Length: 238
Image 1 (tube, one colour):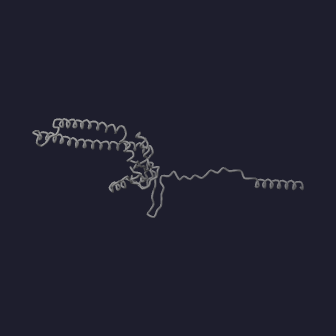
Image 2 (cartoon, one colour):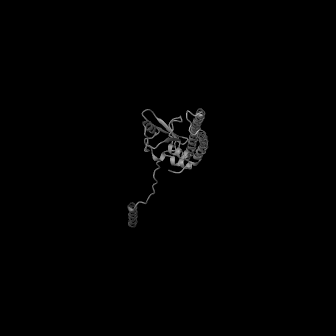
Image 3 (cartoon, helix red, strand yellow):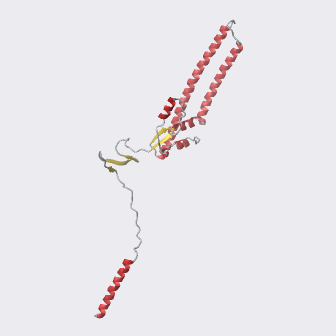
């Protein structure tokens, strides 16, 4: 009986020692996964406010808070239109068209110069007392009238030609902007002038116009798509 008690005590002591060893042993490292910080997926997010709740949802990749197309958060970009238009109009394609027109006009102008020289050779120094004075004056006046009509016509044609070039250049800019915007997921693209650009105005009206064509007083550099549009149009970089 004494032997059994002795054995029991030893067993209890051994178990207690094992328990103490377990309690005193360093805890094994447990890998803890960070809790996710994302919300969702969810069909909508209800936001409470003083004037009522608002449901915000994903509508075709854009944050929407109402059914109308104007109730969307659109991606915005801008293009320095003056820089791109001037670069395009100075390009070889547009410049060669103007050079061809100028060459034709120059040839017609030289024809008037030739006719004027012929009249000067025929009437070298007409004076009122000369018998052919009226004839010479009439010939000079007729040539002068023809020249003035020609100049007016040339100016009209040149103005129309330039207007057509400006519109075509604008369409080219719009097309290039469409490509750049589609590639970058941009919805709205504004034309703008950098607010830091010098006015270079000599008159009040010009200065006021410079103010009017600058819609942004400040803008983040990341929304300026000008360099990408310039590249898309294969224009030289500034």
